[in-house]
Amino acid sequence: MELLTVDKEMCRRDGICMAACPIGCITADAEGYPVPVNEATCIGCGHCVAICPHGALENSRVPMADFLPAPRERADFPAVAGLMKFRRSVRTYKDQAVPRETLAELLDVARFAPTAVNTQQISYIVTQAPGKTRGLVGGVAEWMRANIQVRPYFARFVTEWDSGRDRILRGAPHVVVALGDANNDWGDTDSAIALTYLELAAAAHGLGVCWAGLLHRALTNSPELAASIGVPANKKVCGALMLGVPKFKYSLVPPRNPAPVSWL
Image 1 (cartoon, rainbow, N blue to C red):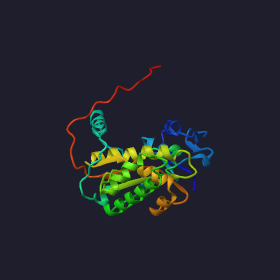
Image 2: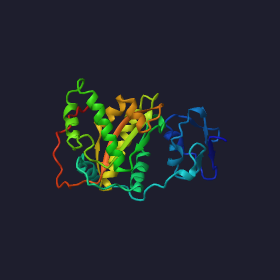
Image 3: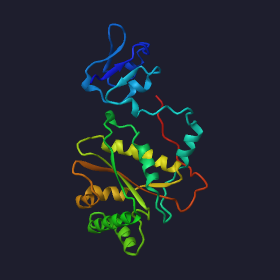
Image 4: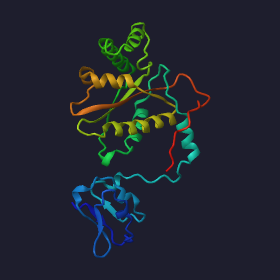
């Protein structure tokens, strides 16, 4: 199947698709119509199809049926900025599970996060049942117990756990673990962007999220713990979030230091 199909009646030969291609694998034929060059370099990003205002182009690597229509109204800056500024790292949760359908909606947003060279390498492991999450906390606590001599600050988390208090995942009913390809240098970056997408989508849903650094470290350094949640051998843990319904509501946005900026 050819990479590009062009409707010559619709195409205006304006070169927009060529300009948008990040790889430069589209050129013009003798008549000015777009044709592929070095087809193997196409990363299947779909920019060429998405940017054509006339619907004249199809790319066999990204079927037209899978495209979404552009929103009729763009979210304005105040609304987006307000969401981003009001977002908090939530560490107190209700004893309430989030429906799987809602979790799936958040992951559906996260999959649209940009990835290096459009590899779309990120996959996820999500705990649906709060009991699964609590069992995972126990595994992290035991890993920390075994490594207190190396990292003495682990002791306070283990002591809290032994006393019945979860200071590791803060009683969150769910965790989302992001996995990148083990042989891809961009896994950590891609995962951070995707999890940030998910975090903001969760905030828009009225849910609370906090980055689970202790879980991330434990899964990265304990092959046994990673295997216990099904991390494949060809994947690496690149990030983790705790997630649930906030127990309390914030009324104000705390201040932040001005961003140090060097203007050139």
